[in-house]
Amino acid sequence: MPFYDLNKQERNKLVEKINKEIFLEIKTSSLQNILHYFSDEDTYIRKTAYLAIGKIYKANNNLHQPILNLLVTLFNSDNEKVRQTTINAAGEIGIVDFAPIETLMEKGLFDVHHSVRNAVIGSIKKMGEKNPAPTLAFAHRFLHHTNFEIRREICHGIELRGRTHPQDILPMLKELQHDKKPRVRNTLIHVLGQIAYKKGCLATVIKDLKTWDNKELVQEALAEIIDVHQRYANFSFYTQTQAIAYIEKNSVVK
Image 1 (cartoon, rainbow, N blue to C red):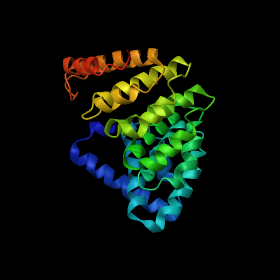
Image 2 (image 1 turned 90 degrees about the vertical axis):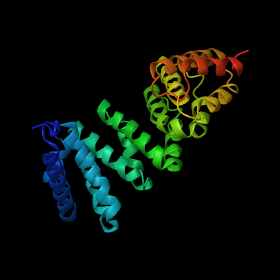
Image 3 (image 1 turned 60 degrees about the vertical axis):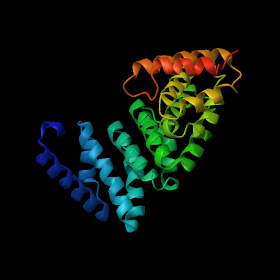
Image 4 (image 1 turned 135 degrees about the vertical axis):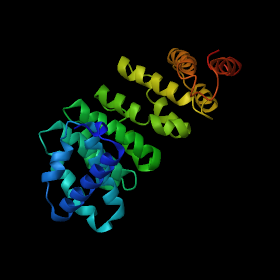
């Protein structure tokens, strides 16, 4: 039965069961139940499993190496769901301890399956929010990779940090302003829009865009920023009218 077809009490019992079984298998270096949960068709079962790995890692210093060893083994699976869940579990660890999972993140970034690569993007988002210094340093290593999909994924991955600390990622975004690939360019514009509608971010983004020399891209970004203030009107700090007025007053492109 799918996770959310269960009532709240049943879900809590299932979460407790999964946590206990994963904890036991980590201690015994077994994989039977972990593989079962990591490959489950239900996204929420897999999520419960990778969250359990993160919780156990954070609460048990003596189990750090056994957990890391298990993740390395799991990532060698032929099943993309197992590899995807492994990367998500590594991301939970990277929130507090990035160095031990850096190699896994790099391997995931180049995985043959899009779901595994997407798990890296999601992991960079959550790690960048809570553990920004090593995460952004990792992201910067691949910012100018010859594979444009890697550049796009990195650009997308650093977005969440930018929503609260735009100054941390704007220098990296600026480095992509002359990227010729449409998918990278479109993602860059998207990320600028996603940053700019958050509280305290519009002024920082506009000030930084004034230093960019690709004025055509800046114009496209401004159009996206204005549009985002309408699309996310219920979540934007400014109304679209206020955003337009601010942009016009602090014109980026003369």
